[in-house]
Length: 378
Image (cartoon, rainbow, N blue to C red):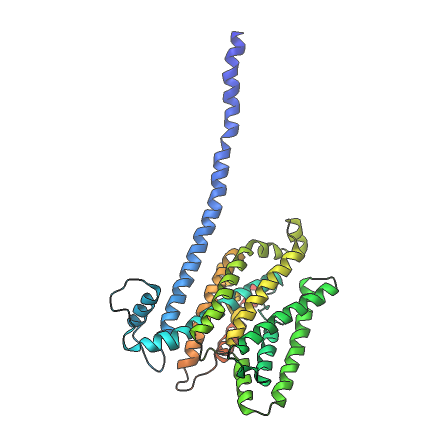
């Protein structure tokens, strides 16, 4: 009996080390999200600082130069932050608060929407050449806006233009999904092909309206809207775009993990437990609404959703949990700077921002493609 009693502590001591690895394992697992959070905060913090600099530069520079400190003071006063000075924006208060700041904020909202929409489309279609208008949303918005100008609906209310643009974007999205549902195939290839057909058809209708218009003012308005611009944006445009863009960006970031799974292919995503068809429709629907809201207040602006996510992916990697918010911040900064160049580079003439994004975006994207191909050949 004494020997049996003596062996019990020994047995407990032998079994005790088997429980020791548990704290180490949980600690190792806990470091993974901590590293991810640190990485996310660093990337977004750097890009947020870049966006802040772009906003200040966009408000300060122009035909009338405003000291950056005066801009910062006025912005701080708008945000209710205590800073030295009277916070009134000085002698340039009207220029800051009613001319440049609304334009810059609309540019930031549109750039954020197009940037995160581009990153989402590239993940869904597993193609770095995908962009926000790939399923015909931009073409639908363009058709709605051009129709409003062509038929004179804009005379009823100035908000008829963004309203018809948004309705056109939603209609295009609904048509693409309806055709895919009738075919019982909501795969990326089907959606892409239907989107190309819809874009071509809507483009043809726009060309008919441009060719048959007899009013030079209408023609000028159509051309300017199709080129994309931020001129004459007001606080009402900011209010119109702010809610859908901010809400859409926040909702899309929730799907970062699902988009990572979609990068594995449909079979791999299903094996991981993802309802591929349903999630693809939800994500694309949300992206289309976000794109429609952006295009409705700015016109058709290209290359933001194509270049920004592709460039950031080369720097920070393909993890969509980080790439999506980074693309929103990067797209906002990119479009604000592009609009600044459009206003000051050819002063006193002001270009449409869509022209500047194409002039800079196309060569940059070509350089990224060549760099990627060269890296692959090595």
